[in-house]
Image (cartoon, rainbow, N blue to C red):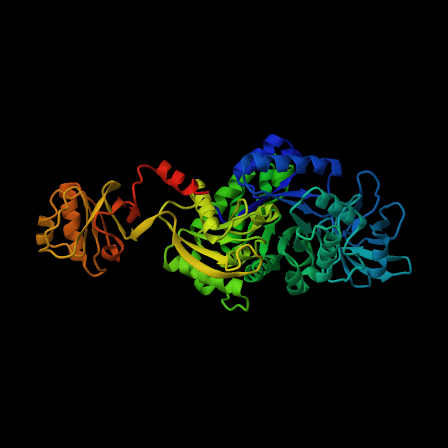
Length: 597
């Protein structure tokens, strides 16, 4: 079944082997996340090489995402086993030295200068809360609010304070340079506080000659929430990093913030990833909790672009089962989603650019024409992303000759990337897209599809054309009937008194009265061009066809004009279609479409 929401899996010791990576792809992984807070470059190099090999073997797009460590604040060196702190105890935060029950070293050291009396300091994901009660020249004093043990390298969150942290640390620069040299597709930028943090990474990528790499901003601080709109403007996507975010802001506000960020992302045609603790219990257990299942499903109902597994696949006991479970939950939730209602009521429909207007028209037409797929021919992936914002029911087949775009589109909702050689024109590209759609069970021969392209074909940013086409040589489209798929020649019967030889032929009639049927004895098939109000003709034809074992279709609008006497056609009652020529089998259908490529 076509899954629209994408799935991100974190690579770690539990799935480090090449075989496990293949299994994750089979389970539905679309994006592989490499967490550069852990592991050496040599370890990540091996993972990148294996992921590239795995996606090539599977013949599927798989984006590789580098997740930076970011400008973190942590506790420095503490005694082995840590120290226990009690509620009401006062402890110094110092710039250097060994930690003890009387003082805690803070890294980076200069952050101590940013702390004023009254500032809240949260240690170890907020499990130990404290507040600054005194400030001196080289340290501050905090009062512990609840018992806990503090050990080396524990994370520290300081909400609502503009900390003097760099946008890029030296480690981040080294990691991004390494990733860019090794062909990563996406960067998840940790602890983004302002738009400048994103622009700093984009500037680095430009200097490295790798500006095509997309930057996903992780929102995991109160400042990131405050500056969300400006961050979204410059980022290529957003990750709702609910772990640290739930420490920095009240936990009760996280669901609301998640919904807000997802909505603003799809309204801006940018991907939104919902992350952290989605199936956390599966790190240790083979089944998730009911609350976790509801959490994943509600992210789908919010219309998130992607959902992410972290420790579940990186270090869990059941990494493959976690991915399989995530896939199953998403598919079920998508089955319950009302796509047309979302398109009609939940999305803003006013645009200033031509590409967005064409994408809107294409999705709207896909509903009115009951199109089975949307084809978009793209170099940068922009049109596919714009189309994705509308969350269409039909799959978005994004045909591209750009290998980087092919991998990157793996993170976008509803987009099925297809890599092909460069097409000469729209007609050539349509053949390639049709072959891909049929070969990958995204559409069938005879299906109606909506195509977007540019009049200046192959030039980025020129999408200005929408085309509605059939896959294959469809002559007439009607309503489904009964009987087997048959091949024969056309005999058009325009009047009931007209004498027409219909023996062994496929008759085309405009009404179905008893006098008409008397002349159709020995007919092989019938194409009825009746109006929507003419139920009588339909009922009489159904009875006649059942008694005489005749194949038929109804409501074949325009059949008498579109078909010609003596024309060789295939009548397919199950699809309600009349095809040009003979189509003996489904294999022949695929061959007929794909041989033109």
